[in-house]
Image (tube, rainbow, N blue to C red; front, top):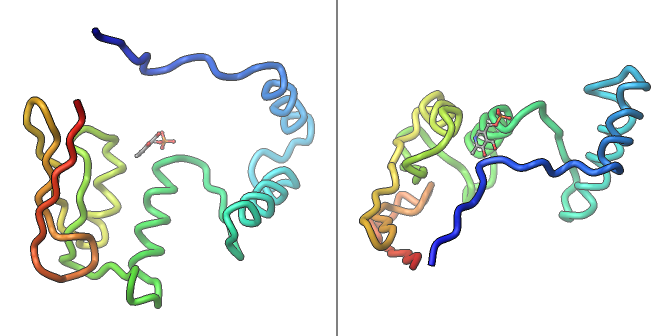
Length: 136
Ligand SMILES: Cc1ncc(COP(=O)(O)O)c(C=O)c1O
């Protein structure tokens, strides 16, 4: 049995199109009241004190890598040379922020029937651990 997932589909209904029209009519496309309300609601939803909305997935990748690089939380902190596991197929902006912060990019290798990860967990600096994830 095989099933093909479409790369892109139309996912906007009337509600989304109306919401976009309200934003266009407001003239505030970036730092307006809707963005502020979304940041507040999302922060509340995930139980965080803050939320920052950005313009793209690429900017979000850069922001999270920078946040992990500059965090004072030692459990999360990334340092130059840390290994980060990335998918073999992704956007260029999956890799560039990691390169920008001097992280060691570890591309996820795969074999035909399963995906095998062999890398040290991100940011631990600990012993090499092997883990295998199977998709069948
Ligand atoms: C991991 C990842 N990187 C980058 C992008 C690209 O996002 P954008 O085109 O908004 O910069 C996406 C988009 O979904 C993504 O999932």
